[in-house]
Length: 115
Length: 116
Image 1 (cartoon, rainbow over the protein chains, first blue to last red):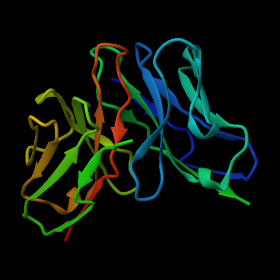
Image 2 (cartoon, rainbow over the protein chains, first blue to last red; image 1 turned 45 degrees about the vertical axis):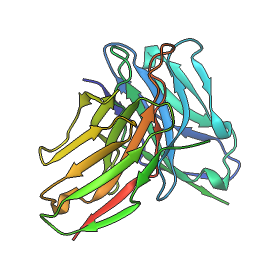
Image 3 (tube, rainbow over the protein chains, first blue to last red; image 1 turned 135 degrees about the vertical axis):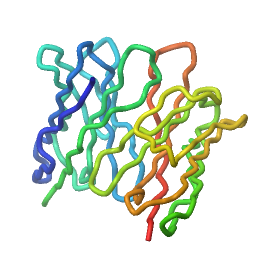
């Protein structure tokens, strides 16, 4: 069965500092990979996705993630944190076979940005 | 752009009551997913529909049922509500299409269900 592990339930960075949110997946076949962001009392917004092709994926709000098959990782980064980036971030996988499948989420990482 | 619409945004019920949550997908999207997010937890997949047929089933209790209608909107029906059903319920939609597989799911803002 596929699973997602997000290292660090809480990450705190200074404004302007590098953001690194870690995600590792467990799957016999590389799945499709996603990062979603959730602001308080709101739904999940897609930041970026990896399906095939280039392993470095750029998303919205200056975020990007790199798929590393050898490390089964899909870490999310942003060079310079803004106060508005404070939110909950979820890494998710979806199995390739069959398509249009459910998302399996990690436990989430709450990002705090302080001045 | 139009997004996924969920209603109601908030719902308060008592134990053993029933509740119906509604989801209106993005226009032309043909697939709907339901997720349950407990306090401080990650979203858990409940059930999905494609072209009005159930396409996948997750950890949905037998007390819950769902369907997708001819206009593609979906309803999640919940009966014999329990305290543990208090959660945020999300609906997401996507377009199957004939192109790239696994078109991303777009989420609504959720229905917050509180059981007293």
